[in-house]
Length: 255
Length: 240
Image (cartoon, rainbow over all chains, first blue to last red; front, side, top):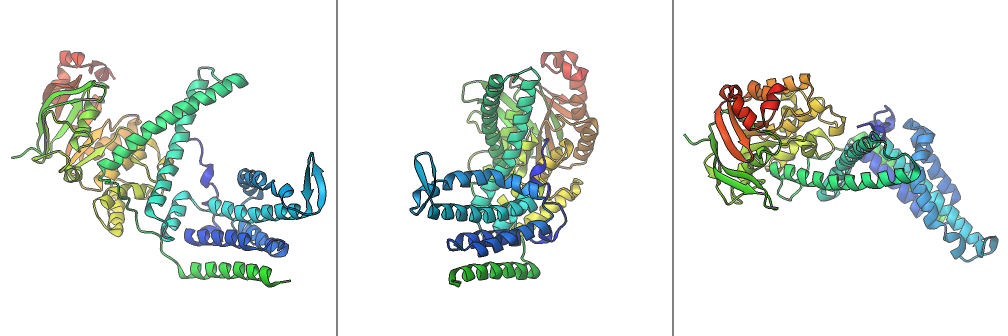
């Protein structure tokens, strides 16, 4: 296995990585919900939440470049999905792109959606960067997510590593025979490796199921006990919830 | 005394009609260490999968501790027979080693705290006590083999069935595993074409060729019979 980058910041010592994973999950959900609950145009409260995310990321010793890189994929999706707001929300025209008109209200809503997404994605990236997947699963269990969901996630996580490992091996084998020289050839190689990888994943799934049966699996998923709450963590998370809630309330009542 | 495991005229064909086992008959006494020898495709893995009911046939009888292996008994049988698969990656499917090792006891109805304690104890026995919170993809090949073994030993099976346990291990890891297995009191059935490991672990050998038992004798006698090894495709393994 040549990649370990997924969990590379989770072992960095910081107050955030010392917090329980459950506290981190609750904090992230609170920030994301806080951003989603802000009324349109509440730019200052949105900026306050964004500052909070930046502060948490700094406390977690996460490099800005890493956060931006991890946010960029989902952010492009948000950008594309919300681009229609620019033209569909009625208002005064502020510009034109080809045959369509951009309205001021559309521009404001588009900007606000991107702002909300930045806060939510930033919080999520801080969470996944500071928390290993097994810790995340432990937190989900403690938060009483159904065991079948957490176990499916657990199996998927392991399978992803096995799949990437097998894809890498297939790719190496193909390259050792000079496959993938030009662009077209590289595309053909990728398709071939993907198809072979999927077939192998299917076979792996069969064998894993047998291994589960051999150890008494009867279709009912049982998990180890979840993590325990720590009083100090509880206080810190409660503090964060209060701050976010106050920000949202302020945004709703302030003129 | 009832043998701990017995195959009586067991035949098995794959769904496409390919014969995998042909009237296989043998029995193993409690505490015996037996090597199941044969080249790739001789039916070793198929035979092992009959031991704990992953594969079942209506041609012949498989008995574990005197009990026929069938749909009614399969749960009890799986408590008695621990099967270690050829590829440890098939056996390590959860995010951490501790969860993987605790999987068997949890399915056996143990409470989570008890299962966790058993898993920790087993990891300690195998020298993997610091690896409990690691993911399988962060373990070395040798550690992964031991981890796969731990997932089975934790349930304290009476029979330990191992499919190519030394495959793709370096010399040091192989020696460590062999030393560890030699000390086990459980009945061992080791499917392998690693004749060196078989010799170090077992006193008796059963040779399978095209799904048929062609020899069942003391291992030293089997290894001395070059004609037999040649006929059953094991001579090359001896050269290794």
